Image 1 (cartoon, rainbow, N blue to C red):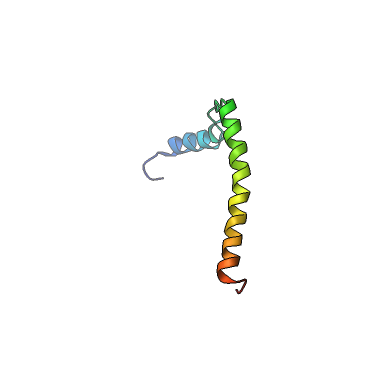
Image 2 (cartoon, rainbow, N blue to C red):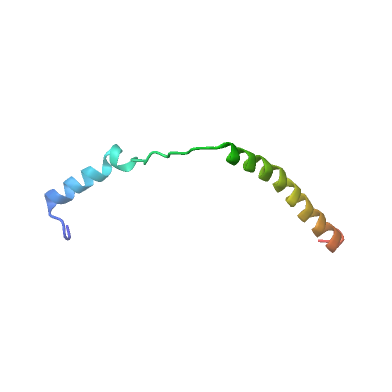
Length: 66
């Protein structure tokens, strides 16, 4: 079977198919601060305004003709 012998191939496949090997996640150390929360709220308010202004710009510049 190529570079690996028959036994080596079996052990490699067994190692790959183990659940621990497939789903080994590194823990995420997420530290949210008050500043992150404030910035998220501000950006959440600004995003719909930007989208609405883009839509209005398109409508006014092209006159509603598609």
